Image 1: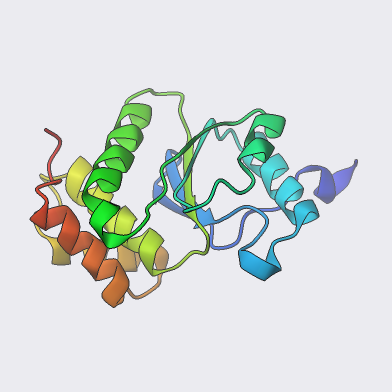
Image 2: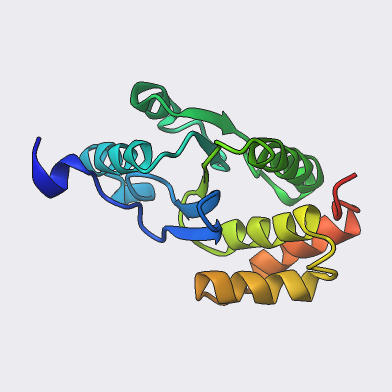
Length: 173
């Protein structure tokens, strides 16, 4: 391959949450019926070429995890699941991200099916967990994620933030 196509394609919704360290996007290849294998391959080429070392999939299913192996990108799968699963899954998610970001050479992408409310809620919760000296409340973190992503955090995302606070998953323990 030559030229632009050899560099792959940036995943849809791609946004840096922590500059050059933590990014988020929709699932590589697209979500649901829009998913295309060729697009997934192009996006994985872009991720690998952009220095991403890890992917965290929050999908409820194990779809496409084999593709990360094929692209040479390490991954973890922590299904967000149902509301009753959130305290455990959110804690695991935040701990993994913190562990990875403590290593200076790691560059991480976190994704859900689409770049939507659930993913934004998880990201806002992570800000509360990882940066408690900066983000002291759920609303602070929600506003920050809205500014970072340029998207409004609705009821589903705010519920994830509320569970993070209510379950005491704030400020690294």
